[in-house]
Image (cartoon, rainbow, N blue to C red; front, side, top):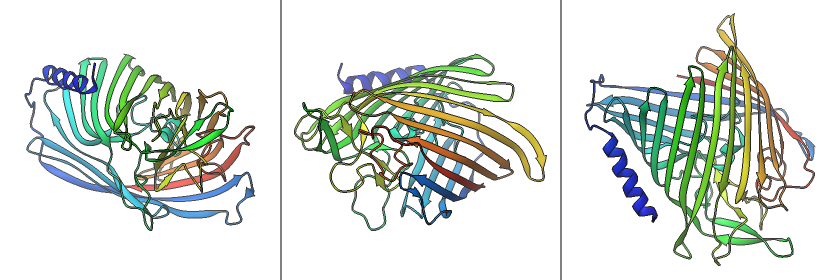
Length: 402
């Protein structure tokens, strides 16, 4: 079945399920909000402690608009990252409820895949985020369907990745964005001798289909399955290959504990500009891509399994404005299909402190071949480094949300 035919059948199915009758009248009006976040950090990577430690940065500030007019909803968020010299849209969509059971989002929305919203408890996300498989946003149409009282189905078609934002003093393509996407740039191929060779790859994400089914089998527990099929278009070859990703998740609460677990298998099946199958593809976000310095120094393994687990414990308190403290530990690992590549490990013990509109994350982030926890940025999710060290970073992020 061709991708275009699948998209047509998907659209027909969604509109058949809907009744096209708006139920209830929402009150017209809009709310403007936002957030300001600051970061304090101290790194300890391969070269030892940074002489600039501890450092304080202005993490981000953002503006939000949410509301409804004549039954059509609007949700929009734009973010600014002064340290990275970039800004970009986080999400922006029009929402409409065809019935009590079918709701549409048209525009830039969160891709329905895996654990809803976040697979993590910490400020750092889990490792699927850095591979474009957690809290990802793309441009297209999404339908959320209440299939039964305890069964939720989400179907989506995304024509392309979210729009790119500007990067100060840079001509780099596609890096000014919130979520990680595959970009044109340098990929890599493992040749017959086991050597890694750089390869130009003019790639763009295109025509992606998503389906996510979540079953609330008790009041506090959810199990789910997700599937993602999309095109990776090579502009030089003028043809697409089909990439896939599948996930199974289990989340739930027991007492004051919250558990998040997930398994993901993905295959970013892509070709270089010469038509060769890539073992590493290029990705980027926040004004950076994984390529790093000159020549081939990084990227993302084209095929792998990801294992995710995290647990948090919420402690209600009454200490002035502080109402709760949540210690947690998040762990995830990337098991790469190419046997010459080295796994990525991501371990984040920490605590979140809630005080009215202020949320503070205190994390001791640790990683092996984690691209943001190393002096050799970008290489970890590609070939990685054999016998990589456990690097660490003490990170305190404080945000005021309004």
